Image 1 (cartoon, rainbow, N blue to C red):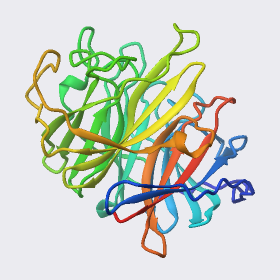
Image 2 (cartoon, rainbow, N blue to C red):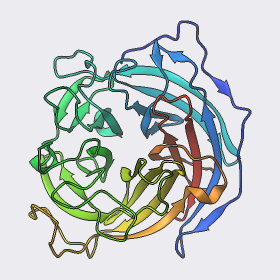
Image 3 (spheres, rainbow, N blue to C red):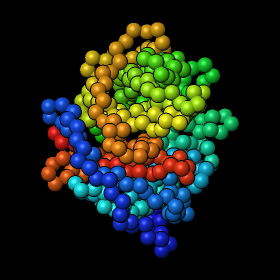
Image 4 (cartoon, helix red, strand yellow):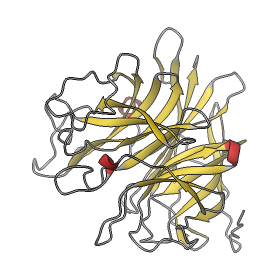
Length: 365
């Protein structure tokens, strides 16, 4: 494992800003979720000569350590991820420390050139002490299709997941720009789930303000044998408020998923509306009665049953400033047996945005 020194820069921060609360929501007869704390990460410092920011995914490594990937396309610093120590308890987040910078490498073992990839989601694989991460694709002149790679702890290439060709960039079908793989989650050591962020061109339109079908494909993939097992349709919700002005930018998409148990996942919907703000919602989905759409080339004008969905978290309920949250992971259990649930936001390297950690507890899961 490569070790990167801080050159005397101490980033171990005792945080004096706390937003603790006792807000709790009952999900069903067994499960309840409670918001504990939100903090803002200091982004005005450089670590290992890299700019802090663009945090698009987080996963738990063990003890109090996490891996966080930046979606910097080697524009500000070479594409990278950080090992971060985050200390918290039931009263809130106490401190964090950036421990190590790990640069992502191409198949030749070199760092990526600008716009050769768009790193988005990352998960740790304990059995091989490795990581699986997604790229939404490169933005070079020829465009590089999205990919899912397994890498070692030094960021070096180990293997590639053979994702279906429908997720390539094409003129009249396939992925939309900035609508590729922002999510991945392990079901077990050999099966992963991932999804396109926005509907394929042949499946449906991007989410708008009217009720309708805005389907993305949830893919269940056996990475040991490199074969797609199933695909299911997940309908993204319509947006609630129109932008100001009305012709300004808006989006709702799927930036992350989290496997819970057989036939059940949690899915994040992240929306932004100009002049209105950010909205983050978490949905619990059930696969049991959904149609396997693996062999359906286009979902438009087709009959199928999507996965069922139920909203379990709405970040607007907690009276906090919400930024561009994109990553979520379970952390260590609290002493009373509740699970910790941690979220991170992507500041887009924008001075007007924040990198945030949000902490929840989950009881009864």
